[in-house]
Amino acid sequence: MSDSSAPLPSGPDSTRVDRWLWAVRLVKTRADAAQACRGGHVRVNDRPAKPATTVKAGDQVRVRLHGTTRIIDVSHVILKRVAAPVAARCYVDRTPAQPAQATAPVIRRDRGAGRPTKRDRRQLEKLRTDFPPQA
Image 1 (tube, rainbow, N blue to C red):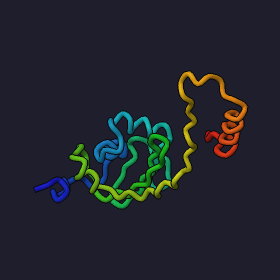
Image 2: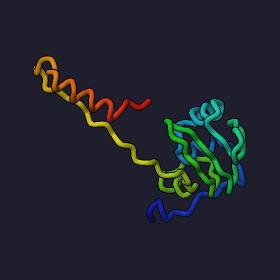
Image 3: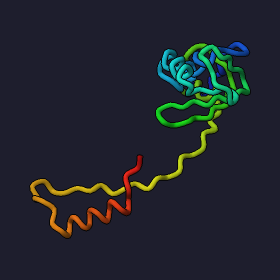
């Protein structure tokens, strides 16, 4: 029997948000989950969450990790870390798709080509105005 068809482990009605985030593999360690909560990066049902905030099936959790905000609906509460395919079935990811970003062309010059000519500098300046650096 594969992990995707394995039954979900039985769990309580609710648990701590830091423990649940760790169990469903959204963060590497429980300490990271607690730190994200203390830093204000976790919200449960649009309320700021402390590490001990309880989550139950049907709650919405917003987590800001690595510069991306993920919107997660809790579908099953688990306490222990399980295999990734089983963990993925414990929540529904409602994060909107990221819009495609236009990437600037990479400007490269051959090594040893010397200083740019006037024409090269004009072309570089045109590229910089067409694709300004993003902050």
